[in-house]
Length: 321
Image (cartoon, rainbow, N blue to C red; front, top):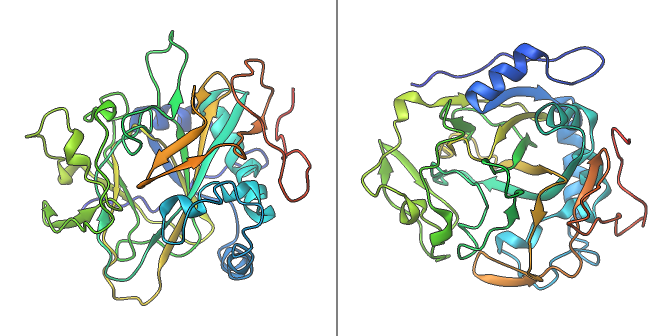
């Protein structure tokens, strides 16, 4: 059994990383768990809010069909509860500690795991183009030698070793084992019935092994660190840090639900030179899409900035400049 991180780090008042915490994050590529909301409050709020998500009058990807992973992308743009969550200072302060003062939320998505579901494969995301035919979804300035996004993975339910919590390979952030420009093939009927060192894994109809730089490479499970989270807690990590999740052991009849929020600096171009997203077996219009400025200001003007579709008001800017 691999090591599990069970301690929680919090700073009173402000939620920025301390120097020591930031050094630890930069070395490992992940940190947590941290608390954004009391566990019982999260469970109660989610019980209420999940009903509201059936209202799809203002969704970004109205073409997406039920069951498609894109179906519930970017629901922070039309749901007030999720709109508030992506702007919570408990989260944004830590993201600012990593990325600097000017930050965009460029995507959010749900990750459900039901009893008996396989775990998520080990993977890394630099451009997020691996799922989209090799076309980058995010492009950092050419002067930068490093890409990726900061992901905040929020547990809406309990996520432990038996209910598919997250796992990470420390220190892998700047070594890419995959070539996303190759793109992966999507097959919704494919359930990857294989073991990676005795752990059953897959990835929602994709197989990350298709784009490994070295086809003979295998992740070393002995180096993995698990990060259990209670409902209302989150783990923060670079998307280029090797990460995966356990299978759902099925001992509990409860699904595990996580909400992943992805952040980049305002210097990054999102969905550059395209008006459609190609992912999970379909193409979807970006006409209603826009990034959210959660901190600072946008001097680059690379991306469309969105207001909330329901209220028409700007999203909360935690640290306006």
